Image (cartoon, rainbow, N blue to C red):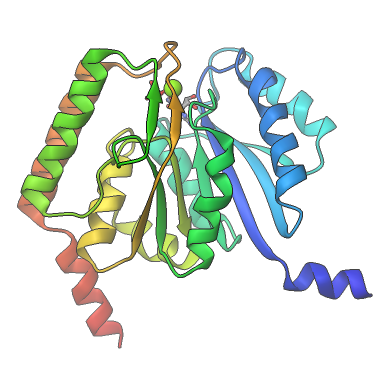
Length: 257
Ligand SMILES: Nc1nc2c(ncn2[C@@H]2O[C@H](COP(=O)(O)OP(=O)(O)O)[C@@H](O)[C@H]2O)c(=O)[nH]1
Ligand SMILES: [Mg+2]
């Protein structure tokens, strides 16, 4: 009975790892992440989700389901529609945890920053993001091309939208459930611009964003097609600058009161 009430009062955290064709990384990194959560998230009611699309063309479903059998708090969810943004959006919209977090399967972001991210969400921030560009961050192994592109892209966002955050693209973010339910329906991008769109919308509509400088070890085995993604990002920025979609959020907010 007591344990029932204790579990009722525990705050809940859901950690999603978006994956596509990751049969090699999943058996290596998911057990590490699971062990970290088991040891450090005892005060939370937590779950870990492998979020696939399609499904993947390799044996991602097979290796994931094998791990799900072994680990009690692990789930495998496959969204039929393609692309990473779709996976996060659909999983998060159905997720009932208080804090929703995602991180890349290669564990490029140091796990020791996970509690800071989650604490920020329980301390009143709507969104908490890992940052490789904020003072205090340490980045290892990034190619010069990606470093320059990342810095240039983030300067562009600041110049055109006057936003407060420095790193829109780090694969390590969290959002409070209420903020997710409110903001995600307005996020249109299905792929890599998803993160930037969510952050710009949140910032411009008055949500609180906490940026945590992290340690990042770049994994050279990237699934990102740099030119295609950069073009998608530029198109996304242009669309948002033209449409100013955060005005719709504010209008909808006013008319619902
Ligand atoms: N669900 C889903 N995840 C994806 C997709 N494409 C990439 N990912 C995942 O997104 C994360 C980041 O990808 P990664 O290649 O490490 O990107 P990089 O670190 O920016 O080079 C990894 O966990 C990938 O498996 C996709 O289409 N769907
Ligand atoms: Mg990576």
